[in-house]
Image 1 (spheres, rainbow, N blue to C red):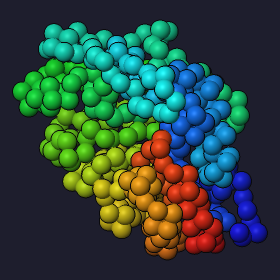
Image 2: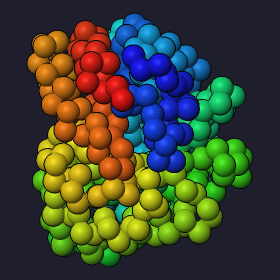
Image 3: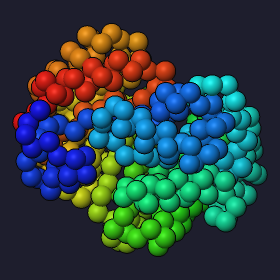
Image 4: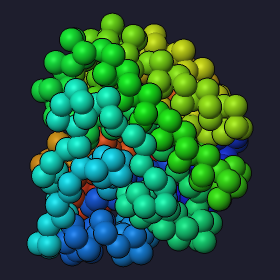
Length: 352
């Protein structure tokens, strides 16, 4: 390794301030993986923030990655709105099973109301998680959407897609309620933890071109996304990470309207070409990705190493910066050797 060998905190601070670093940052995104690696059940991992936090800390330390612990309970905001989630007690992490969703009719849609932060279960567990993180010097992730993803946890997907075509007023009502709840949570975190300790994260799986058209994205999803980000700008948030989950190629002109601050991070899914993304976002943004999760789950050490080698060779010296990571959350059953292949590739081809 280069003699400069910075800590993760120093390495990332230098990356985002445009200063030289010792190597390309390596993030494994191991939140759910850490639960399986620690031989926890979903019930233990998701319902005990302390257990979840400690398992992530130990996993990140074991991997030697540049991650920070992050709250990860799929569907947690849906849980706040009344989704009935089931958490398996078998060893190994499984995404919580949604037994029922709170919106089954147009009447339910129009009667949807924001949860009470005092009693919202997902919010309270997330708050407890970040109390631990801030204690140890980590930042707090502000939930910034996407509102459309949250709707998918409130309404059956097939019904939701029909309503996009025929019941737009109901869709807009629900999105306005969800957006207001997101901003209420953001305001709470900023007041509670201090804006200097907060960064914003958003992901857009249900806004991808494989699910909705660019026209639907522009007219239905985008106004609420822009409202959330405008709110964050107004209150002074400066650090943003957006994850383009799925193929968003046709949505890219609309994402430009977010006017993300310089040095925001753009996390790229394997469905999108990294070269195209690098050219589109340009030198003002840090690019992150995009080792396919399918490769990490079922590929060999050699194939993962070679894929990472190619990414590092292409983007190590990219103007704006590059972070090597999986294309999405790391699958819980990923062979750990494949993560060591990522790390080895960084050591061999990511050092400056």
